[in-house]
Length: 442
Image: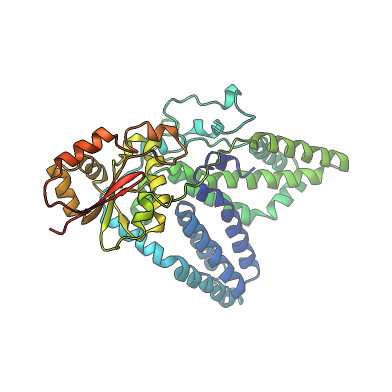
């Protein structure tokens, strides 16, 4: 049931590691009950892994764990076991700083030194309609009108269907608590964990909704978090943070289910209820998953040549795809990044949600090579190797090679060489799928 929000994120493989979120909370709760240095080290390792794999989740997790630990320490300030708990939490903090601290500092330095990321796109915020909209790849929910996209502005990120179990489980929990003292007692036994998980979910969702409006009300929480918490400003698809809200809903529903099962006397009825719920969860979790073969470097390609070149310069692969091309940009530049991973050269090309300031200007300039504006950009960026692709890329999307940004035609290549000024190129290296120009020293 925790997977429903993640069913839309299979294309972002790192986000599939959201299972570390409940793992971190489980380790934390056990550590608070039975403090130990080993438990603290385990907590630090789990939080570090979550941050290093998916900073979106890791940042919220670190802030949440710190807040929960602070509240517990205040409440237990007169507890004789406080010192032991402090040592355990301190061990976790040290492990986190050692494993993830350097990346945190670098991330913060990049964020504060660029003007590129100032705000999230409005379409990437969580809306109420997202909560009932099933992911595009879900196989069995396709065609159910109540779960279909009713918003033409909904992006590939904004599919946050809460799932059948949550939809019936949360109301059932509230009804069980209202109707039965036994159910209230069982739920109360987990009240600390419930309060903590729900608080984490509410905190993350307050950021995920952005500025709203939700039900006509503009939300102030995103701006507050962006001003106070380093890293929040660099988040683009803030709807992803709903995964914490989904976990809170699932935990509440599961707690109510446990209470309900204890109220049902016949064993067969309990088994039957769990079987129905499990079947519904399996049914709605069915989805299509696209697989792609990773491209390999051919011995006679430009990428094989690049692996033999000196690393005291920068490479620019032309033509460049600009970010406004969407998936064409993603598949073009991501494919090039994979193929170039075997060399030690720095590259102008790249794909990510976080692009350097002025990237689109650089793309527009370099695509005019060898015009004077492109030559000035080459000099400014210390580009030593210019790769001109002349053959299709081994990409997973046919749209890439028909876009005009994957390679140039023989006529276009001839026109480029006709305009190259004397003295610009120190060496020309021909490969089966392109040409590498070594720019002469100025």
